[in-house]
Length: 211
Image (cartoon, rainbow, N blue to C red; front, side, top):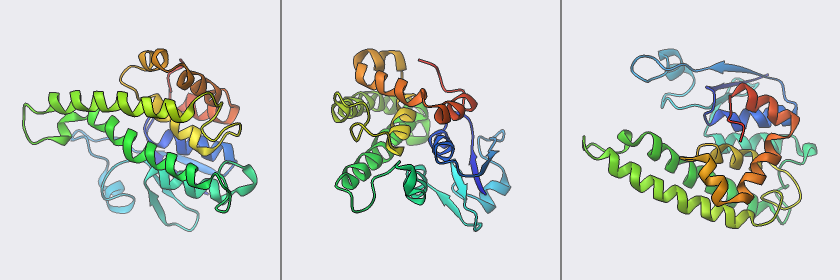
C-alpha cells in the first residue's frame, strides 16, 4: 500500500492520477496547513522536514519527496502499463528531459508567481518577483507548446506519465483560458488527458478546473 501525502490541486494531483492509471493500491493523506501556513509537526518530523507536498510513503515504509521523482519511479515500477519508455528505448532521453523541464522550470516559476513573497526579503519586492515570474511562465509555456507541436501527446501517439505532469502544470497557469487561447495545442492536450477515466477520478477529487 502506498500513502500519498498532499492536498487538492497541488503537485500531488499528477502523482495521484498516475497511481490511478497504474492501478496501484494507495490511500490519500491530506496535509492541512496550520495558522502559520506550515503543515503539522508530525508531518515535518516524520514525512518531510522541508514541509512541501507531495510526499509518498512506499510499501516498505520509506518516503519519497519530489513529485517528478515519484512519477518516474512509479511509471517504471509497472512497465506493462506502458506509461514510460523503458531505459533502453530511444524515447527515454526525451521523456526524462521533458519531465525535468516541467519540474525544474515550470513548477518553480509557478511558485514564484503565486507565492512571490517567499522569494524576496524586501517587503516591497514581491510585485517584482511576480511580474518576472509571469513573463517567465509565458516563455516556458511557449516552449512547451513548441515541444508538443501537433502531436496528441508529448512523446507522440502514446500517452505517458509525462502528459499527466504537463496537464497538471498547465492548470496552474496565471490564466488558463488565456493560455489555452494562446496555445490551442496545449488546450487540446489537456482535454485528452482529463478525458481518461482513471485520470478523471483523480482530477475530480482534486477539484481541477474543467476547461
